[in-house]
Length: 206
Image (cartoon, rainbow, N blue to C red; front, side, top):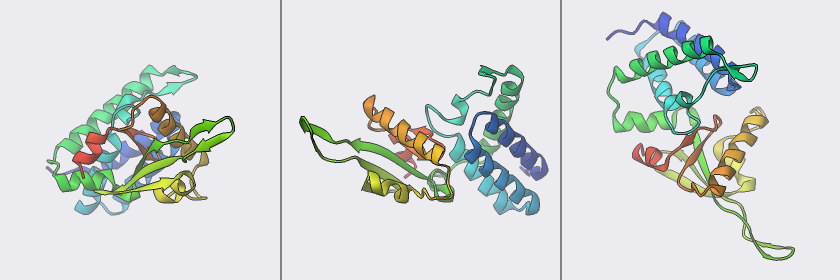
């Protein structure tokens, strides 16, 4: 089925503005970037890149886009939230219009340099002032590619740099810490959206 690229791009720009109401500026920027690229070059390749990104951004469990609400002044805005849900459904229909292969699923999960990480070990207090061990994280940067890193190495491993949002980075780390404390050792945190992705979802696509 042929895609109306003008409508799709306009929907993505509107969706980005709604994401900003939810303090998801990094994700909003990505939607805007893809929408502009689609407007300037409405090719089949551009459409498929958008489809891959939508698959990736809408996946996940707690904290995913489908698990959020548009708020204004501390309360859910019924009008904006209804528009948000309508756009989510349109994107879902667009994504489901083409079958997802294992290869495209893996590509979507790690599209555009996406990385996932989880906290797997923390220092243990041995004596009153003595700690043994370190903060150890597992990082996934491509299908089937993982590595263990320390806290000092984590930023570089996931691609965090001076140009990126420190607030988003700190939020990702706090989510990873919370998952560890809750005993959810099999869940991953997406950098930089802080979405929580179950291990079976990530491994299935790898």
